[in-house]
Image (cartoon, helix red, strand yellow):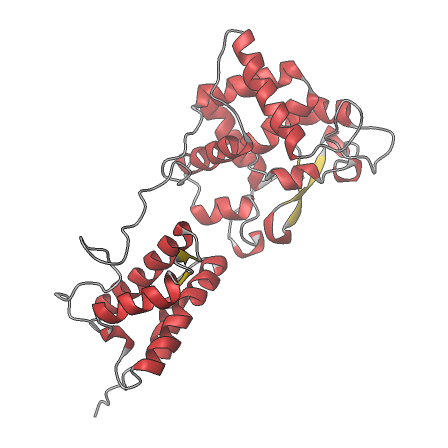
Amino acid sequence: MSTQNPPLSDHQLVLHFLAAREQLTSRDTYRQVVGPLLDWHQTRRPDEPLARLSRADAIAYYREHLNPLRDGQPTRSPATIRRDLTILASLYAFFADRDLRDPDRPNPFHTAPGSQIPPPKPPAASDARNRPTLTAGQLQRTIDVARDLGPNEHFLVVLIGLMGQPVHGIQALTGHDVPPAVGGGRHLIHLRARRGTRSWEPLLPELHDTVEALRTTDPDQPLLRSPRGRPANRRLIGDYFRQITAHATVLGTPLPALDSALLHHTFVVMARQSGWSVEQIQALTGQLDGAQIAIPDAPGTSRLERLAQHIRNAAS
């Protein structure tokens, strides 16, 4: 004799909705947006399921919490309001998918002409789907121009474009992070990535001579330095990229305006084109714990080295 499971409470449904968020950072943001709506609704209408929220209540919540006015002026930025509306609309899409809401009933947080909830902003140019990337040929020219210009520029371009490393991790590198070559003439590099991820990886052959040019007798000194020996900051790194762009024009091989985001996005796109999964790329760039991602290793190589080889082949 089968027994029917009792319906989930609003709190349990919200937990299921949050659990569907893959990234922990996204989950925290969604919790901060959805939690106040749940509390607000249970205070106003404790006997009515959250999934049945009316359009009038959605507008009331919008006025009180998403876009409250002080002295007639908004207290929250338009971008934050749009983000919260998008999250709440996705919650009600989740309810509809679970047949908890009449499919013919409009989503209370979707915009409509004449409504008091503003329409969402069109995707910005910074949206990952709209970001420009370098072609394979442009990436190779960028590496060549950076090598011609100097060790700092070459080090930056190869580490971001072929290894996907974030700028803050590159800035932190010192002589201790790239010790002298081990057996077989191979260098190792101690990479720092997001969320505290660290790993020793074989240094790409393109950077062997460059590292020797950057190394000083003091291993505590940063590898990236200004001409006066000061540690490279973000402004100086921006200058390096502008110099590469200008030098490419002088050499007759013009390039798009370079920055670290363009190079990093190029790395991600080329990695995807090489057949690497999103999870593998996140592990390589330190966005997830690499130990949690099953990536088979080939003898004598690292996953970063093999991926960089894929990208080198595409750029050659």
